[in-house]
Amino acid sequence: MEKKAYLAGGCFWGLEELFREQEGILAIEAGYTGGENENPTYENHPGHAEALEITYDSEKTSFKKILDFFFQIHNPTTLNRQGNDVGSSYRSTIFYQDEEERKEGQDFIRLVNESGRWNDPVVTTLEPFTQFYRAEEEHQDYLQKNPGGYTCHAIYFDSYLG
Image 1 (cartoon, one colour):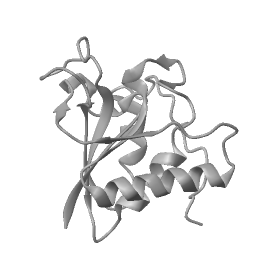
Image 2 (cartoon, one colour):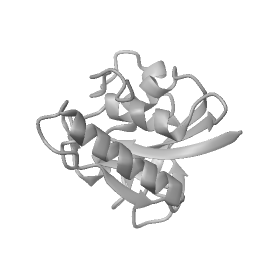
Image 3 (cartoon, helix red, strand yellow):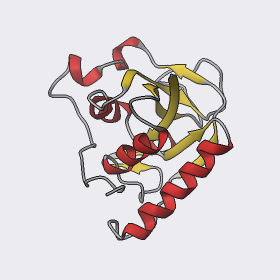
Image 4 (tube, one colour):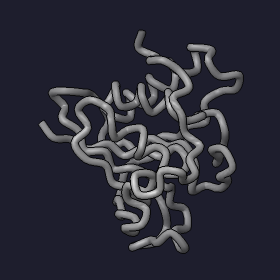
């Protein structure tokens, strides 16, 4: 069954590039969510996070596995920051669509904290999903189009799930 997940963890380019090869991922869109204006743009997205809309096959992967990979590829302990990118656009957020996703997000944040892999506590927020706005075309598949482009994402850890 096709489902969607909405996550933010810094610049959408690096997240998109790493998620693209994960099993069960059907499509990824870079965009904006969680902010104040309708139809945000790269130049005007107050309060919005740079986020991904991840379409996945729930028979091949799960929301929990998506969260597991999400917490492997960004630093969830830096408030409104990933690498050189600073500001609320680069916050670490799980945009949950229902109570089950909220609880899974909360449980995963607890798991990451208890793992001791990071020196500081997780600052990833849980925010209700409202609306996703697709980013401009130049931001879609950015690192495919620009292989030497900037990213602050990498696979930092193995799975938290063991």
